[in-house]
Length: 297
Image (spheres, rainbow, N blue to C red):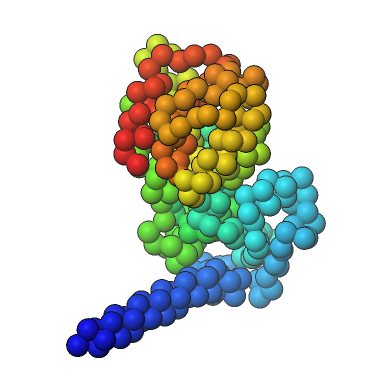
Protein backbone atom coordinates (compact mmCIF):
# COMPACT_ATOMS: atom_id res chain seq x y z
CA UNK A 1 0.00 0.00 0.00
CA UNK A 2 2.72 2.45 1.03
CA UNK A 3 4.81 1.55 -2.02
CA UNK A 4 1.79 2.22 -4.25
CA UNK A 5 1.19 5.60 -2.62
CA UNK A 6 4.85 6.53 -3.07
CA UNK A 7 4.74 5.44 -6.72
CA UNK A 8 1.62 7.53 -7.34
CA UNK A 9 3.20 10.46 -5.52
CA UNK A 10 6.25 10.31 -7.76
CA UNK A 11 4.00 10.08 -10.83
CA UNK A 12 2.14 13.18 -9.67
CA UNK A 13 5.41 15.05 -9.23
CA UNK A 14 6.44 14.03 -12.75
CA UNK A 15 3.11 15.27 -14.07
CA UNK A 16 3.46 18.60 -12.30
CA UNK A 17 7.01 18.92 -13.63
CA UNK A 18 5.96 18.13 -17.21
CA UNK A 19 3.03 20.55 -17.10
CA UNK A 20 5.26 23.26 -15.62
CA UNK A 21 7.91 22.61 -18.26
CA UNK A 22 5.41 22.78 -21.12
CA UNK A 23 4.00 26.02 -19.70
CA UNK A 24 7.54 27.42 -19.50
CA UNK A 25 8.25 26.46 -23.10
CA UNK A 26 4.96 27.94 -24.27
CA UNK A 27 5.65 31.18 -22.44
CA UNK A 28 9.08 31.46 -24.03
CA UNK A 29 7.78 30.62 -27.51
CA UNK A 30 5.20 33.36 -27.02
CA UNK A 31 8.04 35.85 -27.09
CA UNK A 32 9.54 34.86 -30.44
CA UNK A 33 9.69 37.45 -33.25
CA UNK A 34 7.25 35.42 -35.35
CA UNK A 35 4.74 35.26 -32.50
CA UNK A 36 4.99 38.99 -31.86
CA UNK A 37 4.47 39.73 -35.55
CA UNK A 38 1.37 37.51 -35.64
CA UNK A 39 -0.14 39.47 -32.75
CA UNK A 40 -0.10 42.85 -34.51
CA UNK A 41 -3.74 43.92 -34.95
CA UNK A 42 -5.16 45.24 -38.21
CA UNK A 43 -5.11 49.02 -38.55
CA UNK A 44 -7.43 50.56 -41.14
CA UNK A 45 -5.50 52.11 -44.03
CA UNK A 46 -2.19 50.64 -42.88
CA UNK A 47 -0.26 47.50 -43.82
CA UNK A 48 2.27 45.63 -41.74
CA UNK A 49 5.69 45.22 -43.29
CA UNK A 50 6.24 41.57 -44.21
CA UNK A 51 9.85 41.79 -43.04
CA UNK A 52 10.97 41.97 -39.43
CA UNK A 53 14.42 42.85 -38.16
CA UNK A 54 15.97 40.93 -35.29
CA UNK A 55 18.87 42.12 -33.15
CA UNK A 56 20.82 40.39 -30.39
CA UNK A 57 23.47 41.57 -27.87
CA UNK A 58 26.18 41.28 -30.53
CA UNK A 59 24.60 43.64 -33.07
CA UNK A 60 22.20 45.82 -31.05
CA UNK A 61 24.79 48.61 -31.34
CA UNK A 62 24.04 48.73 -35.07
CA UNK A 63 20.51 49.94 -34.37
CA UNK A 64 20.58 51.94 -31.12
CA UNK A 65 24.30 52.65 -30.75
CA UNK A 66 24.97 54.48 -27.46
CA UNK A 67 21.88 53.13 -25.70
CA UNK A 68 22.87 49.48 -26.21
CA UNK A 69 25.07 49.09 -23.07
CA UNK A 70 22.18 49.89 -20.72
CA UNK A 71 19.94 47.33 -22.43
CA UNK A 72 22.67 44.69 -22.23
CA UNK A 73 23.24 45.52 -18.56
CA UNK A 74 19.53 44.76 -18.07
CA UNK A 75 20.02 41.25 -19.46
CA UNK A 76 18.76 42.02 -22.97
CA UNK A 77 18.34 38.94 -25.16
CA UNK A 78 16.68 39.94 -28.44
CA UNK A 79 14.97 42.88 -30.12
CA UNK A 80 12.29 42.50 -32.77
CA UNK A 81 11.64 45.55 -34.97
CA UNK A 82 8.33 45.71 -36.89
CA UNK A 83 6.51 48.41 -38.85
CA UNK A 84 3.12 49.53 -40.08
CA UNK A 85 3.24 51.56 -43.32
CA UNK A 86 0.91 53.94 -45.16
CA UNK A 87 2.58 55.80 -48.00
CA UNK A 88 5.59 57.54 -46.52
CA UNK A 89 4.23 57.28 -42.99
CA UNK A 90 5.21 54.54 -40.59
CA UNK A 91 4.62 53.26 -37.07
CA UNK A 92 7.70 51.51 -35.71
CA UNK A 93 7.52 48.90 -32.94
CA UNK A 94 10.63 47.69 -31.14
CA UNK A 95 10.07 44.79 -28.73
CA UNK A 96 13.05 44.17 -26.44
CA UNK A 97 13.04 40.74 -24.83
CA UNK A 98 14.94 40.45 -21.55
CA UNK A 99 15.88 37.47 -19.40
CA UNK A 100 13.20 38.10 -16.76
CA UNK A 101 10.14 40.32 -16.22
CA UNK A 102 12.18 42.17 -13.58
CA UNK A 103 14.82 43.04 -16.19
CA UNK A 104 12.17 44.32 -18.62
CA UNK A 105 10.58 46.39 -15.85
CA UNK A 106 14.01 47.71 -14.86
CA UNK A 107 14.77 48.81 -18.42
CA UNK A 108 11.38 50.48 -18.80
CA UNK A 109 11.67 52.28 -15.45
CA UNK A 110 15.17 53.53 -16.28
CA UNK A 111 13.71 55.39 -19.30
CA UNK A 112 10.60 56.86 -17.63
CA UNK A 113 9.95 60.49 -18.49
CA UNK A 114 8.01 63.11 -16.53
CA UNK A 115 7.06 64.68 -19.88
CA UNK A 116 4.81 61.75 -20.86
CA UNK A 117 1.35 60.63 -19.72
CA UNK A 118 1.13 57.41 -17.72
CA UNK A 119 -1.19 54.83 -19.22
CA UNK A 120 -2.75 51.52 -18.07
CA UNK A 121 -1.01 49.45 -20.73
CA UNK A 122 0.90 46.31 -19.76
CA UNK A 123 2.50 46.49 -16.34
CA UNK A 124 2.73 50.25 -16.86
CA UNK A 125 2.92 52.47 -19.91
CA UNK A 126 3.47 56.06 -20.85
CA UNK A 127 3.28 58.07 -24.02
CA UNK A 128 2.04 61.07 -26.01
CA UNK A 129 0.53 61.61 -29.47
CA UNK A 130 3.45 59.98 -31.29
CA UNK A 131 5.13 57.65 -28.78
CA UNK A 132 4.29 54.77 -26.48
CA UNK A 133 6.45 52.80 -24.05
CA UNK A 134 5.39 49.89 -21.82
CA UNK A 135 6.54 46.62 -20.32
CA UNK A 136 4.75 43.27 -20.28
CA UNK A 137 6.23 39.97 -19.19
CA UNK A 138 9.87 39.78 -20.26
CA UNK A 139 9.38 42.41 -22.97
CA UNK A 140 9.88 46.18 -23.03
CA UNK A 141 8.14 47.78 -26.02
CA UNK A 142 8.90 51.14 -27.64
CA UNK A 143 6.62 52.56 -30.36
CA UNK A 144 6.63 55.78 -32.37
CA UNK A 145 5.37 57.29 -35.63
CA UNK A 146 6.50 59.95 -38.07
CA UNK A 147 2.91 60.68 -39.15
CA UNK A 148 1.44 64.16 -38.70
CA UNK A 149 -1.97 62.55 -38.12
CA UNK A 150 -3.31 62.17 -34.61
CA UNK A 151 -2.49 58.50 -34.02
CA UNK A 152 -2.35 58.27 -30.23
CA UNK A 153 -5.51 56.15 -30.08
CA UNK A 154 -4.29 53.77 -32.79
CA UNK A 155 -0.84 53.40 -31.25
CA UNK A 156 -2.35 52.67 -27.84
CA UNK A 157 -4.69 50.10 -29.36
CA UNK A 158 -1.70 48.30 -30.88
CA UNK A 159 0.13 48.53 -27.56
CA UNK A 160 -2.77 47.15 -25.52
CA UNK A 161 -3.20 44.27 -27.95
CA UNK A 162 0.47 43.30 -27.73
CA UNK A 163 0.64 43.77 -23.95
CA UNK A 164 -2.37 41.54 -23.36
CA UNK A 165 -1.01 38.84 -25.65
CA UNK A 166 2.44 38.89 -24.04
CA UNK A 167 1.19 38.80 -20.44
CA UNK A 168 -2.41 39.70 -19.58
CA UNK A 169 -1.48 39.82 -15.88
CA UNK A 170 1.57 42.08 -16.29
CA UNK A 171 2.43 44.33 -13.38
CA UNK A 172 5.18 45.48 -11.06
CA UNK A 173 7.30 42.76 -9.46
CA UNK A 174 5.21 41.31 -6.61
CA UNK A 175 7.75 42.26 -3.97
CA UNK A 176 7.06 45.94 -4.69
CA UNK A 177 3.71 45.56 -2.87
CA UNK A 178 5.60 45.10 0.42
CA UNK A 179 7.19 48.56 0.31
CA UNK A 180 5.62 51.12 2.70
CA UNK A 181 3.04 53.48 1.19
CA UNK A 182 3.55 56.56 3.35
CA UNK A 183 5.66 59.19 1.61
CA UNK A 184 6.17 57.10 -1.54
CA UNK A 185 6.70 59.17 -4.66
CA UNK A 186 4.43 58.16 -7.57
CA UNK A 187 6.02 56.16 -10.40
CA UNK A 188 9.37 55.96 -8.60
CA UNK A 189 9.56 52.16 -8.41
CA UNK A 190 12.49 50.65 -10.27
CA UNK A 191 14.71 47.59 -10.47
CA UNK A 192 18.50 47.71 -10.79
CA UNK A 193 20.23 44.60 -12.11
CA UNK A 194 23.70 45.55 -10.82
CA UNK A 195 25.96 48.31 -9.56
CA UNK A 196 23.35 50.01 -7.39
CA UNK A 197 24.76 53.29 -5.98
CA UNK A 198 28.00 52.51 -7.81
CA UNK A 199 28.74 49.10 -6.23
CA UNK A 200 28.83 46.17 -8.64
CA UNK A 201 28.20 43.71 -5.78
CA UNK A 202 24.76 45.24 -5.12
CA UNK A 203 22.70 43.27 -7.63
CA UNK A 204 19.00 42.50 -8.14
CA UNK A 205 17.91 45.61 -6.26
CA UNK A 206 14.31 46.82 -5.92
CA UNK A 207 14.12 50.57 -5.27
CA UNK A 208 11.38 53.04 -4.34
CA UNK A 209 11.81 56.79 -3.72
CA UNK A 210 10.26 58.58 -0.74
CA UNK A 211 9.90 62.02 0.74
CA UNK A 212 9.36 62.64 4.44
CA UNK A 213 6.96 65.19 5.94
CA UNK A 214 9.96 67.45 6.61
CA UNK A 215 10.90 67.40 2.92
CA UNK A 216 13.88 65.03 3.03
CA UNK A 217 14.14 62.48 0.25
CA UNK A 218 15.60 58.99 0.28
CA UNK A 219 15.57 55.70 -1.59
CA UNK A 220 14.38 52.56 0.17
CA UNK A 221 16.06 49.56 -1.42
CA UNK A 222 15.90 45.78 -1.17
CA UNK A 223 18.74 43.59 -2.40
CA UNK A 224 17.66 40.05 -3.26
CA UNK A 225 20.63 37.80 -2.64
CA UNK A 226 18.51 34.81 -3.85
CA UNK A 227 19.76 32.82 -0.82
CA UNK A 228 20.94 33.69 2.68
CA UNK A 229 24.49 32.88 1.59
CA UNK A 230 24.10 35.17 -1.42
CA UNK A 231 23.08 38.03 0.87
CA UNK A 232 26.04 37.27 3.15
CA UNK A 233 28.42 37.41 0.18
CA UNK A 234 27.06 40.82 -0.86
CA UNK A 235 27.50 42.12 2.68
CA UNK A 236 31.00 40.63 2.86
CA UNK A 237 31.90 42.58 -0.27
CA UNK A 238 30.29 45.77 1.07
CA UNK A 239 31.97 45.50 4.50
CA UNK A 240 35.30 44.76 2.84
CA UNK A 241 34.86 47.88 0.70
CA UNK A 242 34.04 50.01 3.76
CA UNK A 243 36.88 48.38 5.78
CA UNK A 244 34.51 47.41 8.55
CA UNK A 245 34.97 44.20 10.57
CA UNK A 246 33.26 41.19 9.00
CA UNK A 247 31.48 40.35 12.24
CA UNK A 248 27.99 41.44 11.14
CA UNK A 249 24.93 39.36 11.99
CA UNK A 250 21.33 39.24 10.80
CA UNK A 251 19.31 42.25 11.95
CA UNK A 252 20.09 45.97 12.08
CA UNK A 253 23.40 47.35 10.85
CA UNK A 254 25.03 50.53 9.60
CA UNK A 255 27.26 50.42 6.53
CA UNK A 256 29.75 53.29 6.56
CA UNK A 257 30.03 54.00 2.84
CA UNK A 258 32.66 56.69 2.23
CA UNK A 259 31.02 57.70 -1.05
CA UNK A 260 27.34 57.50 -0.12
CA UNK A 261 27.32 58.28 3.59
CA UNK A 262 26.16 55.98 6.37
CA UNK A 263 23.67 53.43 5.06
CA UNK A 264 21.20 52.14 7.69
CA UNK A 265 20.34 48.57 6.77
CA UNK A 266 18.75 45.32 7.90
CA UNK A 267 19.75 41.79 6.93
CA UNK A 268 17.00 39.18 6.89
CA UNK A 269 17.61 35.85 5.20
CA UNK A 270 18.16 36.35 1.49
CA UNK A 271 17.31 40.04 1.69
CA UNK A 272 19.22 43.20 2.57
CA UNK A 273 17.00 46.23 3.16
CA UNK A 274 18.47 49.72 3.39
CA UNK A 275 17.95 53.45 2.87
CA UNK A 276 20.09 55.82 0.83
CA UNK A 277 20.09 59.62 0.67
CA UNK A 278 21.68 61.09 -2.46
CA UNK A 279 23.42 63.80 -0.40
CA UNK A 280 24.76 61.31 2.10
CA UNK A 281 22.64 62.85 4.85
CA UNK A 282 20.96 61.08 7.74
CA UNK A 283 17.17 61.00 7.32
CA UNK A 284 14.99 60.91 10.41
CA UNK A 285 12.58 57.98 10.58
CA UNK A 286 14.09 55.77 7.85
CA UNK A 287 14.65 52.98 10.37
CA UNK A 288 10.87 52.64 10.64
CA UNK A 289 10.56 52.23 6.86
CA UNK A 290 13.31 49.60 6.84
CA UNK A 291 11.75 47.67 9.73
CA UNK A 292 8.26 47.79 8.17
CA UNK A 293 9.58 46.30 4.91
CA UNK A 294 11.65 43.70 6.76
CA UNK A 295 8.66 42.62 8.84
CA UNK A 296 6.65 41.90 5.67
CA UNK A 297 9.25 39.59 4.17
